[in-house]
Length: 96
Image (spheres, rainbow, N blue to C red):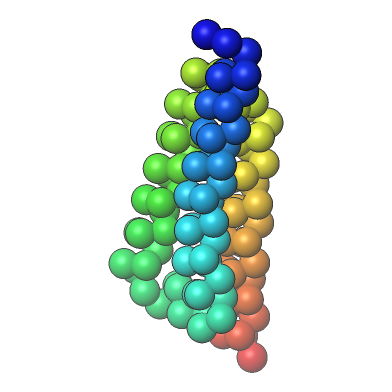
């Protein structure tokens, strides 16, 4: 396979993973805006499922050599930071 084709596949794979991460980030941001996530077990389950699915996609892409392991970790870390901020914001609001 040509080098430029491999680079193209790698770029496309990373872009798709970023788009999936952005969808999860939108879910987190909606809940941050409304601070309702911990009160809704269904939402929490959906978010957990989405995060798990993305982690599996990232693992698959990294095993194929389409992305670097660090790129995948960076995507997940950003989502985990936002999720942590959501929990913290809800806890702060609840304790007021």
